Length: 128
Image (cartoon, rainbow, N blue to C red; front, side, top):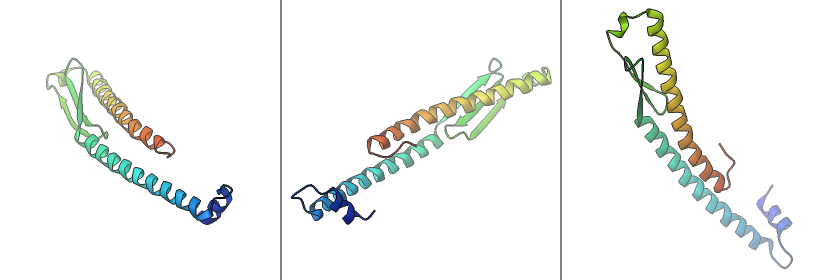
């Protein structure tokens, strides 16, 4: 709907449509500034998540998985002695370590993103 038409429809008695339209435009300008600020925060958060890492170990430390908070696997360390164990157990241990690393990384990332999402909702935007 055209802003001028909206201003005319929602203008109070004795109020001119231009005055109401100016209020709408001022509110829109403020809203856009808030959104630009939140976009900057989102970009900074994305960079921060890409840089931070967590390390998860499994099998009593025989397997270590390092992953970024954007779920990019960075390292997999396996104790050479552990490889002498039953192959099925080795595979299960590695798989569990990888799953746990992804799960923890995802949880931390989601919590950080929810904080930004809440700010967006407070600024009047629907949730992400």
